[in-house]
Image (tube, rainbow, N blue to C red; front, side, top):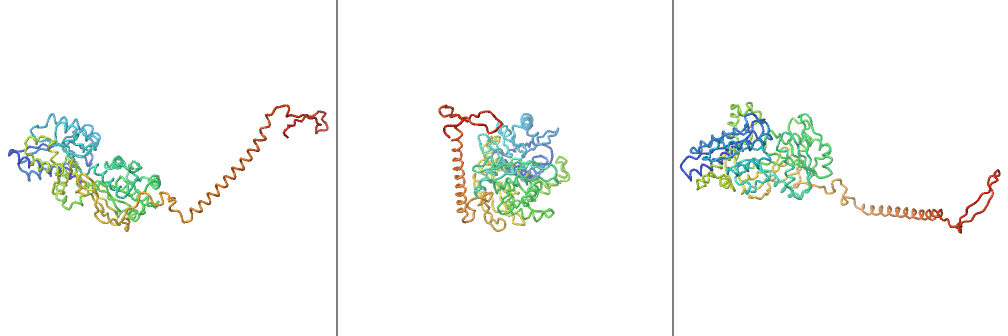
Length: 532
């Protein structure tokens, strides 16, 4: 799914520019698109994996809008940057050099970049805002402050802000106030800060946050025993932020402790269906197939972008061309195409179409060179593309297409989906009736009726309260009696113990007596206290 991100963005952007060009001037409109990125392992953020989307998107637009002249170039370090961290450190310098040396000020400039730069998004935004250039990328927590982000449009695959809203409203829907988080730190970046981000942006919920390192080898399984014991004493709702194979391991261990009954909820997360994240659900080759199948009835699956909610989506039209480009162009470094095309292609096509349609509504030709003016034209818009519809809110942020699904024993069934007509607010709507463990129409509370340890007084048998009171009275009586006896004994002891220091001679009386030994010729002096 993610490969379509550049594709959709490119089409929508170029569509908007074309319409503006037609309304403003018969002269040819020129657009230069620049994509900063890095060449490295095939991850969602590498430009090799997104490259075919730009090629197919621009080719489509050349046929659809023949009077639109555009150029597209990648910005990357030819010496080789093999990680997001390294690229993020060099990104601003890389783009700044291009702006000063290569940018044509007479052309409309658009910066389109995949994800990867994480906390450096705002630095890229500052650069684009200073140059008044339209920026299309993933987002930052400050995105909705348009005083700070005037030229920024966020058309990414998913929005962290919408995702946190999705979870918060979902927790409120079922009155959950305590949630246990397990977050995996491994090769999949989506899960690295997923749980912690939602925790930071939630109110009124008590979270227990745990982060663990994924095993370095696939054949080694992580031991969740200590976490499961802790989880049982704190909540019945767990957010599991990790891939499907790690969840499968957790469920097997939880099942062995009888912690996959209808009392427990495990919430898994998926940005979009893609092979890299694995298959959520039992698989035919699973060693513990029956156990996993039964345990999955306690799992809810959250999908950030669920394309099944859009009946107009048709990704198959572009898939053959993406595959061909991967196999024939050495630049993409994936000659054997070990994985299917990534849906990040969509937003490139989407962005080009947006620019085409947006620019067509601008009557002042000077506005074409204003990134802020172009960005405002994206707000509160819905764009229909060959790969589905894309809706943006009043901030230029992509509206969510979230869903929650439960496992019915054979497959996941969506029972909740985000409301596309909620505007800037967030709202869940029911897609179908929930069947939790096959027969419940409600999810369990985060704390059992009898408490986490089953010892709440409201769950004691009838009559146990009277017996407890009697036992308490007996114990109290024994305690008081023992204390009284000890008090009397202490008084007698203190009374006699005080005589040793009475040295008044008037109270002393001496007498002589014979020794008890007949061999002794000594007199014995007896001290007699007057009180005796």
